[in-house]
Length: 236
Ligand code: FES
Image (cartoon, rainbow, N blue to C red; front, side):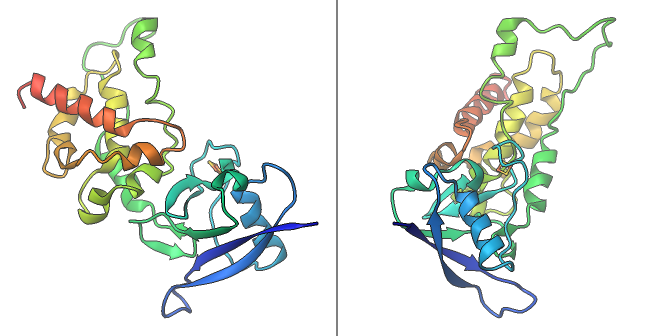
């Protein structure tokens, strides 16, 4: 006998809806391990083509399909419906980001904050003849940092990010630390004043929402602690 799960989905089209509302769909579970994204596709392709949501790679790489399911941020393409442990799923756009339509949020501000921390290697000394050498030990320090796919699940889960529109947010800090921790980088003096701002790392209240929300199991809170330590060691 077929098994169905209820998807109660946030709907809002600013061009025709006065208010957001929730619409309920029945999704048929067609295979063990069926993913949230397959459920959303089933609705869009078989029941309601007006439903808007983002997705691209379907592999947990592009970071485009962050959504909030029963209060938890996640990527729809790597989340198994059965792992959510319930037959009633309330699906919303990522919190703290402006809704463009249905589950699609405006990530402009999120990416501007990412750019603010200069997420690239900065060099001051002369370019070497060959490669910028990095020892295996120093390379290992970047594990748990470089894997970020910019899905926004961490920043969108953070109450400080919701409350302070200028707060850079856990994603920007994780990305900043990825470069500050890189033995080839010489840009600390450019980045640290930005991070030492009142909208910077000191505004984090260490509630770990970002750690729980990250679908890649990265730790933005640890990055924030490391940046604070660097600021103190350098007497900022
Ligand atoms: Fe690319 Fe999910 S569709 S990360």
